[in-house]
Amino acid sequence: MTMPFYSSVDQLLRDRSELARKGIARGRSVVVLTYADGVLFVAENHSPSLRKVSEIYDRIGFAAVGRYNEFESLRTNGVRLADVRGYSYDRRDVTGRWLANAYAQFLGPSFIEQQKPFEVELCVAEVGIEAAADQLYRITYDGSITDEPQFVVMGGQTDPISSSMRSSYQEGSGLADALAVAVKALQSAPAPGPASNGPAAARILGVSALEVAVLDRARLPRRAFRRITGATLHDLLPAENRGTPDADQETGGDDAPAASGAESTS
Amino acid sequence: MSFPEPRLPIHTALGTGVQPGSTSFTDYLAATAPHLLPGRMPEASQLQGHTAAPRTPGLDVPHGTTIVALTFADGVVIAGDRRATMGNMIAQRDIEKVFITDSFSAVGIAGSAGIAVEMVRLFTVQLEHYEKIEGVPLSLDGKANQLAAMVRGNLGAAMQGFVVVPLFAGYDTDATDPTAAGRIVTFDATGGRYEEKLGFHAVGSGSVFARGALKKLHDPAADLGGAIRTAVESLYDAADDDSATGGPDLIRHIYPVVVSITGDGAVHHPDADIAEVTAAVVNHRTTRPGG
Image (cartoon, rainbow over all chains, first blue to last red; front, side, top):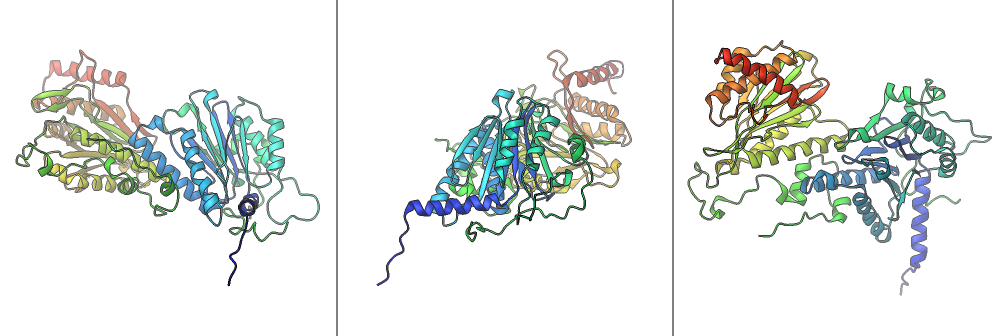
């Protein structure tokens, strides 16, 4: 007679949680923050085409970290849901709160029912008519949802980034200042991957290592999302980040195989 | 009759229920909420009391009338009058029948207004949906083909008298020759798609007269101001001879809708600008009624 394996629910969820957290922690980070004219997304991303930040709807933007295929399918289906809702009701009826709830309600049950949890963390941001109406929602792999008033930091080594943001973030700053704060915060984290011996060299993130976009209040009521790339981004960055980088050898996309958190012993 | 709520099972919609990689909003809508598609008409036999011969539609619904489009040196201009008719009645004086569908395209509609407006709304979402999912916009020919498919999908309704005839104008950002980037595409009720190489076209009840005017006035090398003036002139001629096309209404300040599309994008010209052009045209016609 075979004995069925028994694991306590508590243990199962803890294992899944650990797997998801480790998977997410291996990636590069994203910072989402509000500034005077809307919401700013800054991601460390070496790929010009595998995006971490994208447009969902008129007022809504999306940022994600973790496994690319997983958050890409969440993004695509978010666009579908939003477009159907806007088409069947009205464009004004598509809100960030609604979309964040939809994601949370999908991720929550998936975390409990599926063998492997989603290794993703999402931010749904909405730009309002005035600064007080800007909203940032953080949705984690288990469907937890939080409403952050100023900024959201997601991804790999978030502790140094969060503390840098906390100390230098200022409400209502201009685009260039907000970008400088976010880039400085992202640089404070060590590069992901195997830790090198000795102290980590100071990192400088240039145009090719950054993915930047805004939800621009001035473009409302229609599509507020705008990417900032190339020369425009170059001119906005702090002076020390404008130099041409030594050939950017780093790859974009996924940084580690699926569920690589499971094999780790740390 | 109950109006069905949009069915959006969050689980299937966000999860694996959908084919990955699909970029078509229309296909998604057809799979998840088909009742939202335009032109989903009941069969003729189900329209109780309206089973007359297909050529005489059982319902009197507003019809849009004249749309003109013409190319100029930097792109293309598309314009429409503001009248909708229902039989011999004026259904609406200030209907808008020209819509900007994305940064580099616009559609004008003639025919059954209700279905046509809905079709343009779906077309607009379709273009934006593709752009958001793919990260790049659809090519100009891709857009025209999408619209052709939508017109073809309306064939059943067209047979019952609810014909939709769009006129598509766009700026081809991939064109090597900027003077040939402004393009006009026309459609027939069966979804036939025809590129207008001559650089001007008109659809709707007043199109015969508008096209006559365009044939004489169209100048492919004109500047934006000249192209707008020609568009307004041709709409004036259409209204002059076609009772279903509305002329400029100087009393109520209702002027044609004019959209121009150039390398800088599609622009809806404000009423104040068009009022000026219209005043000049009307002024000229008081001395020479034939233009």
